[in-house]
Image 1 (tube, one colour):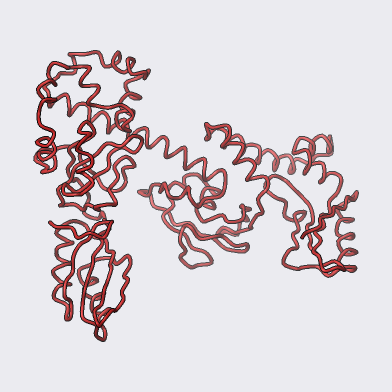
Image 2: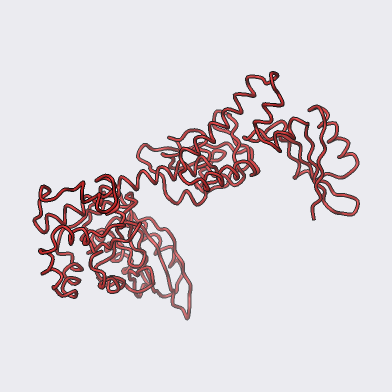
Length: 458
């Protein structure tokens, strides 16, 4: 149990005098002493915090502050200004205005009032760490902050183009928890874009609000492009011209004030493209509806038609199914999911069978990826237990210029069972790896498996 006391004095020097008296009576816990007078929090909170062991063995926390500090802590920044009146120095005013400008930026980036208040609460009450830039500039960040938080604290553009980080000269992951005294260097690339997963480990209000704003804007633009492409491909399929209907009126009928918002809704899957076509050209879809669902399913699954071009991993609205993990070269088919855009499956994925009852959401897709794009693939390998088996398998994979994400091996009855995750560029790359592995001494079998562990048959 923790007992808390607060000591209010008139002057700053009396805070330290009182601290000395308290420490002379009780034994302090050194790790729990914090001097927020010498290093105030970003919201201008100031106080001395110390924790001691009392006579009965209980811990006692003592806060020591001046009247002015107490009023700021209890009533906010405005009370601090009122207290200072004409004695407020320009430097102090600048520090307060910087913090207020940050608050206004969060409000601008956040549409949800509850989210804004939650960000403000977090920023006000979290403990802090103190880290340095390579030039020696000091930055105060909430406890648990990461290099991404630091990058956004330095500048928004650095945060948006952050590709890696160094802590005290050593490469660290972007999810690394900063510690007081760390010297942080951010590595950037003009081609780098934020990863949506960053939101899961960022702590500062600025980083989270800027990331969410970027995601909203990127999703909106990508949704619009995807919806527009899907819409006009369907029109061309049924030989409908742009001049045969009023697009603005069509968008308005669905409750969207502009064509851009209408296309974005189509791209997100909020509006069914098939439903729009039924409204535009119902007589031309009668024959299509009478066609056998099984026939439609088979023809689409074979990938006989050209469709939306899948441009790799940087499109937030095109996701690759984890159940079958397609790679370039696989025959693929897309399924429009509300709010997520298109999920791409292998044409022989078992989950496609479950989707055959909702053909309006199928969409034809085709590969269009850069040579340097990497796709994760799972392999299952069986082999005879022997010395250097793991080394030979790893070296064989490396010799094909393939990155190994993880290898798990266990031996049962002199048989090695391996689960391997690698990154490949395309199906030809994967086939080359499988052929090389099959020739390693002692390998009994090596197969590609899907996300559920089932063997993938090409």
